Image (tube, rainbow, N blue to C red; front, side, top):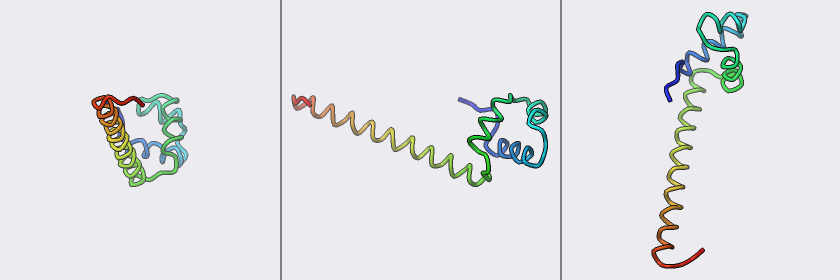
Length: 87
């Protein structure tokens, strides 16, 4: 899914809000909803750009490890089935 704003842009918006720009005005200027702003604030509030990049890297690594685990479990189940054993 393509996202409209990068993490860097989102953190910039949040920093503007912390500097005193009203949330409604930011939403109107940049074309996103209030709900998006508050979701971003919940996720990225207080982060720097480097923190957000590190978070993204960890999320990607976690997804990769979950895929590897799922594949490993499927291979084990297929091996058991090939041997004719039941769980």
